[in-house]
Image 1 (cartoon, rainbow, N blue to C red):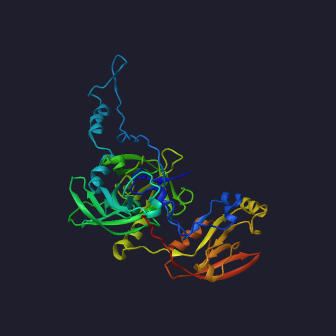
Image 2 (image 1 turned 90 degrees about the horizontal axis):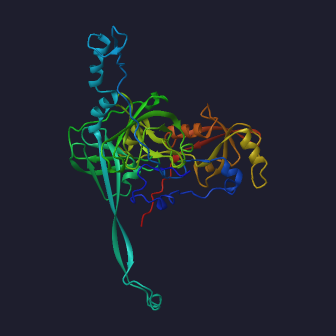
Image 3 (image 1 turned 180 degrees about the vertical axis):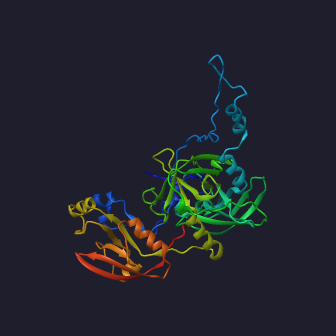
Length: 436
């Protein structure tokens, strides 16, 4: 399973570079074992990465709101669409009325933009080609050369004075950002900030009275509701696709993107390269999420960042230029009886577990807040600040919702004993990727 960003084919974000971003890519000897791999470990506050590949699919066609055309019965017993029947007369009105998708597109479409980002990469090239036995002895002269990498994505305007939200991976490392509005205007954009941990970025263009896409409360959405995606897939500007909300609260680990700290919205609305950064809308034309990634091993499974996360991170980026995330520094997994059996029966595992449920700490990062507080591998976390945590996802939500510097009261089991420790969170150690 290699999920990718929806605009992965662009050479602007080559996958071979992104694979090296994880600042703490080495895990414990236990986690390299067969049992460790089977747990699908979640890194809490460790690692930055991206999504991956995609499969294309045809857009879903949604018919207009159903108003049945009922034919009138003739005296001969046959069917007729004669105008004498009041039911039959209702058909033309239904046929000419725009459906809810059309209404949403007309309302929000002008606020969706195309983003073309480019950056210049310097590299050194040989001053002469071919093999020369004297080259290594005398030292070959190298001349600098440059090439331009380009990326294409989508975005949407959230303030009339020109603030735009998009994905971090769309504009990461960009020298120039050009924003194209639906009316054809091209504006130069300036990146106010980007957060690779949640894959959110904010761009600013100099303009006034721009159309705005309203953000909704993503906590209110439910599986089965309509989902409308607008963006620029494969360079086809202002493309609209429709589906439903397939699921909510999909953990980054379940989505196959464990290096992101997001609970994703899952949708079957068609998303393709270039859709990254575009809005996912409800039937009222409100932004419920931002399209981000697609599963490589499936068709019609895409993921969007919820609007509540967008608002929280975008506000920090617009005001501070960066986003801060609380960080413990543990590698963990949800403990189940099956996991317990796999660990205890593995001769290569350094752990022996007695608990049946909770959040198992697999590794503690050296020098992290958890390490300074005395947390150890093998601890089973039961509660944080009096709140029960039964899964790794629940624990991560509690930490992510806290502020940097907050003190968390952690209740855990250690070798069958009850322990209580206090951990003061630190800022998530984001490592910027090097792209020489």
